[in-house]
Image 1 (tube, helix red, strand yellow):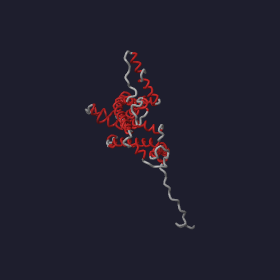
Image 2 (cartoon, rainbow, N blue to C red):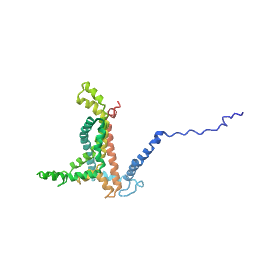
Image 3 (cartoon, one colour):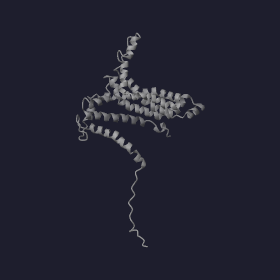
Image 4 (cartoon, rainbow, N blue to C red):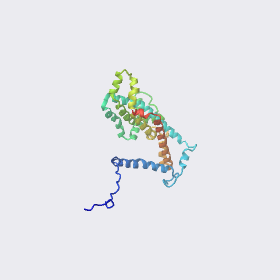
Length: 298
């Protein structure tokens, strides 16, 4: 029988690198993120550098929109200042308000705390505008509050609507679930046995909270604070419905640029600048925190 030599043996095709199964499984999510997040952001960036008052995205490049924003005569920086200030104050107040509620939910309802906290999320099923207009009917002159006080013999209710305080109240009311739900989940991660052990070893209530409960709940608290800050910086309905024209936020300036002014490049430039400012502040705060210690990695 003739034996084939090495030159006569058929050559096999080079091996083809197999696509990881994880990448295949994640491809729909990756495609959704690209189409739903990256593509709109790239389009906004393209419009931000387009010719002012035109629709020449991807066909022109100019920094005239940013020059107009940073012009000393332009007061748009006040809108930025109001938006960032409102977001910071909202986060600070909600952290103080939501933590005791989340702590009480976990202590009173235990494993059912997650389900009970969902009740606080039910208002999200109703349009934000509908809920805010409900407060308008409550605070407006001759409304629920004013009429009730007059019926009781008082002169009437205080002037609440269309003030900076009304905007802050609306933001706290609207964004409470976004702070409370992650905070409740964070506190639920605290092992009860660990707290009991610390108490048996003589640790005081304040020490247990500072050394055990707060660090272990910090991931949920951080998520709630970041989520609330990002949403608060872009708030618009609260300032328009409850604040009237008492305060103009940056989101209102962006809306006006895209609608009445029909200046999409300016609106895109403001939006892009807002993304940079909010992301920069969030990253700066995170850089000052010891995330490894907060997340329990060391």
